[in-house]
Image (cartoon, rainbow, N blue to C red; front, side):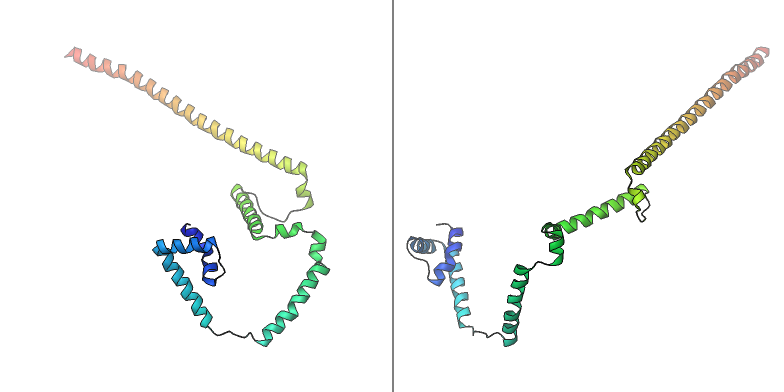
Amino acid sequence: MTCAELEILLCDYVDGTLHGEQRSALESHLAGCGACTELAKDVAGATAFLERVATVEPPAELLTRILHEIPHGRQRSSDRPSWWRRLFGGWIESVLQPRYAMGMAMTILSFSMLARFTGIEPRQLNPQDLDPVKIWQSIDDRAHRIWDRGVKYYDNLRLVIEVQSQLKEWTDQAQAQSAPDSGTTVSGTNDKK
């Protein structure tokens, strides 16, 4: 017998309801395992302490409340379901589970954050806003605007690059023209000396 099996059977052993082979196997394991022996002593001591505790009588008010509430609760649930259960059926209970409710809340929060980051203005929806043609037109319009902005940005970059390259050509030409002019004057002054 292993220690895990002993832990499972220990309560039955302490209560005295364990018989036969299981009892003898448990006792032989207790004889060989010090940790399980300590555990068995602790459980036996806790059980002995609980037996010495006086029994507590529940207040009469509690018993009356329990007896009064339990039958009505059973009759309500078995006789006639609530109005929302009759209206929506059983599927609403699964939707109202905490994990699904939190999932829906996180989905709504995610969509609202995405809408805010993309520049969609939150406002009350009208039935006209849910028209698939209008939705497609607005998506198409937004896509074209984004494309046009990208092309304009690229063209502006291209223009800047062309202007810079033309300016560089002109400065190179100006330097090339000024270099022979300055070389002749310098060489001309050198020749006269």
